[in-house]
Length: 505
Image (cartoon, rainbow, N blue to C red; front, side):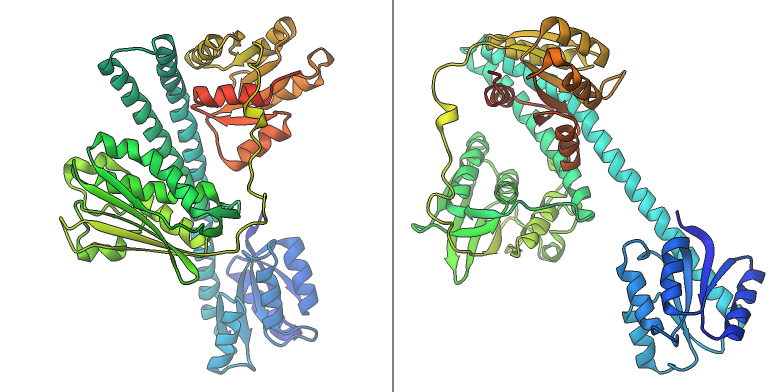
């Protein structure tokens, strides 16, 4: 922890160093001293002061170099640096100091009141920055908890509808339409939760792209197929023009699908019933151009510059605020920027439709066969039923997952606490366990570790079921002994895929 009132006074002249230390001590600060650049760097690392009062002329390193090294070291980067000098007094010297990372620069001789006032001002700024970081940390924590709490009820809702569809696959159209509506709205809620978490991760620079060669034509066809259902429900015409040649980019296929899907969903959302939407993919020099246009409500000219700003909602009226959180286009821009591309919006005005153009740098196609996908695992003889244990503190969630798996012919048991899960596992001897991470008596990760230590349960496969779906949550689950991590609400297809992929011998 940083000592918030500890100051490191660095000066090779003993009299000057003593005078500045006395001034600061009389003002109520704790002061430690250093007479060289090397000593300053060592004490900054070991004592973790709040501020370094740093003279520019030192016997071994210049104050500029000391400042640069302090700011480049992750352990001392947040330490404030108030640089002082009696020799380097010109404007370029001040600029050099600030470019090196100094938080302020004073010319000696310095009046005692001025020195104390500058130190106090910098420490106030540091305190405000610490408070902002703490608020940001709590916000991220809140969003993760919010996502978990929202996903918990969404899981049994979606799974209950899936179960009804399997129990009565030939339901009348009105009944099936109601089921489809529940599934669509549940999926929409999940997307909103994921968008909120993405904004938090992006703002902290925690989004990591999984870059590989991506063929945009194939990706866009898949996204268009998904968007076509949305357009059909609104009697909209969704057309496309794709090139005859493959266009490859180095990118994250999931994130690029998120970007194009977001723009297509927006086009459907803000285009009237019976309207028209068009998606175009074309080569433009060394770039790929994706253009998504519509004849919908359009964008006022004065809002075009801010359309990609977080929480901006152009074209919304009071009765349409439920259409989104105003974060989708901000995510689009950030993700496209991370791919080294650009995105722009254009519109002739309200009621004149809108167009969004994405440009991405093209790359060489992958080596022959690099993108082939093995299909053998998805085919073959039907798998025999398995003994499966479902553990979730939510009785509804456990029952719905168990019912779906039971409908597929598996023998399923349920448990609602960690202790009960261990007892059931020893008695039931499941081949596969779907295990909630958040249990009332112990974390699911501890249950997984305990299962792995029991020789009687050797070979059991573990799937984490959790409302926490960030990368670190998946990594923690795998490190605890899970074979796979599923984020709630897990669909029937995802549950079945997990059973197939982790099928015990």
